[in-house]
Image (cartoon, rainbow over all chains, first blue to last red; front, side, top):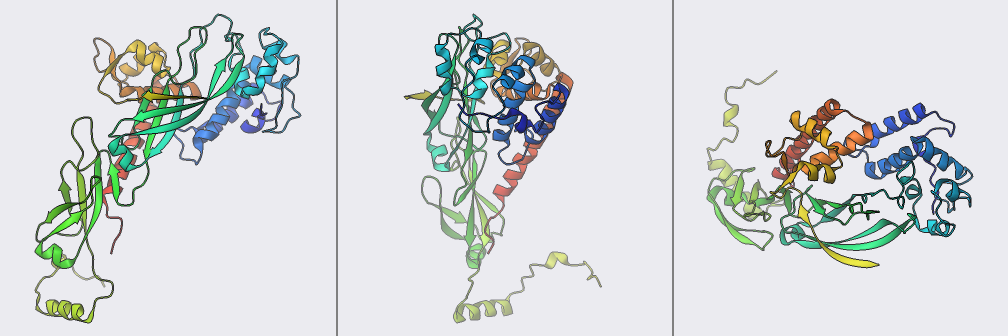
Length: 316
Length: 106
């Protein structure tokens, strides 16, 4: 089992009062709580902070933690002292002590203060939240994701241990960025008749080379040559199902959005749309002949793209 | 090591859950759920039967985390939930605006 220095995590001395511990936790929680924080690794950081506070805020758990000793470095392998389990483990057998190697430090304290697994109290399993990132193509077609979890289980005496579990989850087609899935009963195991926890999967979409997604709608940039925008054209536009031809009307302007109905991500009923956002592209190095033709157009055209500036007086 | 294949349900699937189910799945006490419903932060889908849209579960789980981690009462929780909702709406609007804008200007 790896040692964790809960006092260091909260940035307080081992002699800190309960009030100081609460203040330190509050300060860190305001900064790292994943529901309100934009800090990098806020989720992981808050998990450490929450775990430390859960133990140190409770007098019995704090005493049990202090009894483990203070001579360990964070991350160092250690075992609770031989008499620790007799004092804090609720009288479990001596064999239970050996099983702690497969537990996490937090698991030792989770069952303290009254409600211990194995003491006739039904304990619900922990809910898990897992982030997973899928591609736009996987979102469109549906996919399976593989999750590697470390699930807490308790033996008949209530001794916790971590069991590696690989879970494959079918993600139905039509996932959008930020959507959540619930997989009932796939969180931590309940104990003494408590229900198993649930697994929540937070979906995010990986950035795509061409498409940008908002909800079930997709956006793709559509570069047009100046003459295609002026005269109209039939052009190929990529979609998630392959390229389709799109009729660009004459007089199309930059920034206009041309809608390709039902070419977005699938919904439970129907599909989103794909929008082609028009850009006017110009040749970076026009040939001599192209320059000549553009110059001829410039000489003959009466088009004034800034006509709407009209009456605005030039500022000195 | 066990490998299982599990079916997943969208949280925003168009189904309803009871107050008891909402309390069990979100971790919020029923009394607090009722208070948040009264404050219109977690409005029930059917007020008479006190059932919620499954989509509300996500918000209820957020409320539960905030209630537990900051020891907020119903009034403070309602205020924070409204502000979080506003931030999320603004972030969604910003992402949508970015998606609509051309990315490669020539």
